[in-house]
Image 1 (cartoon, one colour):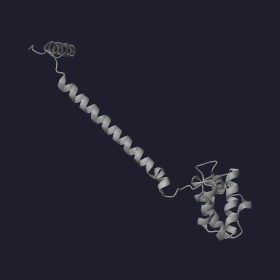
Image 2 (tube, rainbow, N blue to C red; image 1 turned 60 degrees about the vertical axis):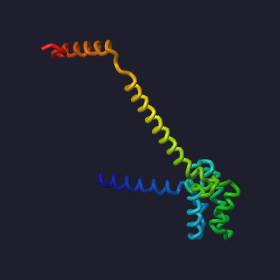
Image 3 (tube, rainbow, N blue to C red; image 1 turned 45 degrees about the vertical axis):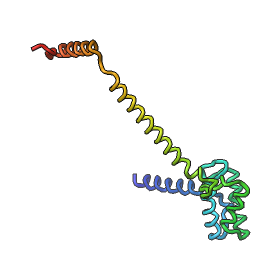
Length: 171
């Protein structure tokens, strides 16, 4: 029993390690650990253009592998991280960045969800307020006629009698 738990734990660790290295292949890893660390950091900031919600480091797509190789070539050529990002943005557009820069061109990405949420809240507020005003206007403007009041009293009296309660007006 204890051996099976140990084996299960080792299997879980192995699966986690394989999943963590899913995108980057061994032949892509640089010999210099400092450059490889920079490549991994850049890879986590760049979007796979095929998968769209994965970084190029996490993606198995051929295009992501090409971009990873391109990043490593640029690092070996002595380029800075910003120069590499600028090169990739010029080549693929700002969409390649997982976190778009805060510029006037991208304000809609940053503020759009908050604006939509605020507009939705405003619409709900206006709808509820108008609904309440309609209900109040309907209650004020429509009082029961004497015939309706008499019918209501009769119906309530019949309901009370059915429950074993004395009718209104009887002792």
